[in-house]
Image (cartoon, rainbow, N blue to C red):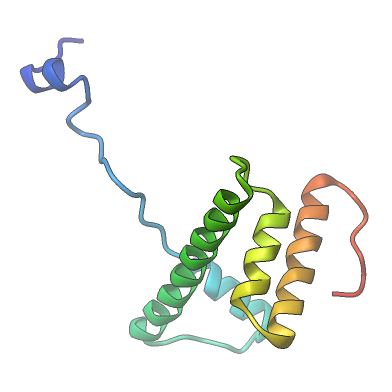
Length: 119
């Protein structure tokens, strides 16, 4: 397949997007909402966009804080312990405890180990 002049110079395909991938948590928010409250419906797109923005901001802050902790510890590998530490510094009270228990159980599930029933 022959490349166009722009493709030959830059080495990139002209049809590909570049930059940060922007995802949406909307479908996950709706699925989790249905599990927790089966009769729940979110009618307004604006409300769903707000929840999506909150989830996106929380994950962005969590990854930023985890990265800062990694730099402080002079490591280059992101571990579940670093994420737990970042969660502990960002959240407070019962939300922090619940988030750590759910995260721990998710890691155990992926690793194929028995999950604790406390969460």
